[in-house]
Image (tube, rainbow, N blue to C red):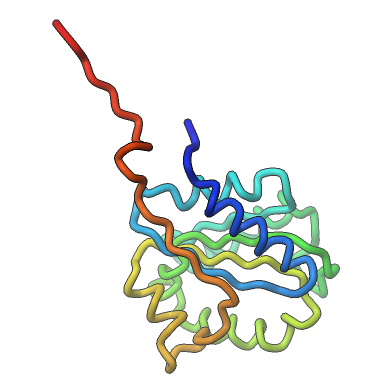
Length: 171
């Protein structure tokens, strides 16, 4: 798959990653479906300590089991107890779907973020494709994660000049 014209977004994500080596960062990424958000994030963190979790519409226990296995496989750490304070990027894709899995996730995240971020070097990227829900989660004053995000970015569609256009001429 070709990857084009996302230098501006890649540079922003790189700067956020550098900041997270000093202090925890929470970034939310919004863009409509099939626009390349996941590809952008995978490309940005491909050669760095990186964990990608997808919020599927499934039973909470099954989702948690999948996450535990992915954490063990990618980060080689035990899940229970205090993990070592080391820098890495955690991407949670389709973040708004926690609303259907377990809506209390947002207030739990608020508590953990507020109590642990000062001692953390986590680069937390929360990605979603339902614009209104993501805006509400992070920008509505009555929501638990209001005011917690340190960065936000909107992934926009390509201009027509960057799209891979194939034209058949003749028969």
